[in-house]
Image (cartoon, rainbow, N blue to C red):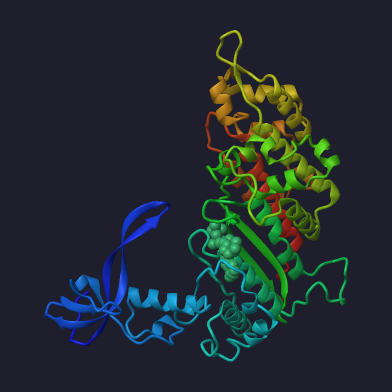
Length: 494
Ligand SMILES: Nc1ncnc2c1ncn2[C@@H]1O[C@H](COP(=O)(O)OP(=O)(O)OP(=O)(O)O)[C@@H](O)[C@H]1O
């Protein structure tokens, strides 16, 4: 940008720098602090770089004004609002352990510290921001995610209107962690007492507790290790928290979007499938392992082994299964429902192990033989449908014509691509009778829109649908619906 520059003006100048991204050296640039030694009318200048004193000539596009921003904690107070000033202010604060920076009222930039910072979120910090917003002074204290949450909370209470908090950023930026901090803090502001507190009905966790405790469950089924984030949410979510007139949480509702279904059958190299599969394979008891015919470890099943990443440093999948089970109980999933749930997950693992051989007679179809037949039988048993019906479903395609259905064989490649080629979701539903309602009442049935959504997810006229994906997506929807039942939708008094 062209500026009126004079000798002695403090500026940023853009200089070429080699950057390395994903192991590849790429041309990049960096902004360096400098002082103008001479400038022409068009904005070009000769500058002396701070530190080295080297004098370089710069085009107008490579120069930005620089102010003294050393105490700035709100970006709108920068002396010059330009890219290098913003980046330098954020970098300086981050280096000093200040991961939060305001940018105007109600917007905060959070930089991921990638290390636990318990002092930022302890009881003293919670108290410090309790009245933020109520006092109408959101900038008085250090920028903090609690300040934004507190501001929204008190505005909701003051104006009696719903508030929305948008948490956005690229994968691994810290959205999930930030959302959890916000929820915990809103629960705290609403008077939530920790579960250690001995008042109340110990057998019935509070709504706040159920909301917070449902998180591990959603994460187990909806998160996976990616190349960018060991605990990446593979779905979008919108969480509604309902408050009663007295200001405490009275209920919640979680809406989820666009679960990454393809991960189930094809996680990318170096990534993992959904956490729950590794938890199950690491933490199932000997008796459960035999009941569900599970392999000894994640290496034993294609769905968990194919991408080549079995364990994660610092993650104990067996211990995490205990956390997931605790969350299941917290949202009210009984032993029967848990059994069905783990049976279906096990069935998916077996289904993933089914492979197809070309027909021995050289014909069009394919056959399921050897160990694959055992996997298919195990899947059929766990899903509660006959092995013959499942075999037919995975090796044939049915077309409905005015003269009746025409069944034709699928080649090995087509069958393998679709894995069990249950040609349509409707057929899948017929074969896996009825897949999720057996968990104990289908919330989907009570909500026609949701049911429609499931049907729409199946490409109409598609030659075949990958049933593990369909089943897993239904399982996930069912789980979200159960969590919603547990956390309630009590809008009375909100
Ligand atoms: N405030 C924080 N304090 C400490 N560590 C954090 C914080 N925020 C994020 N992290 C670390 O960064 C990791 C990634 O964060 P998170 O899962 O929240 O990212 P995300 O934006 O939700 O990613 P994705 O879009 O892939 O789900 C966390 O597992 C945690 O280790």
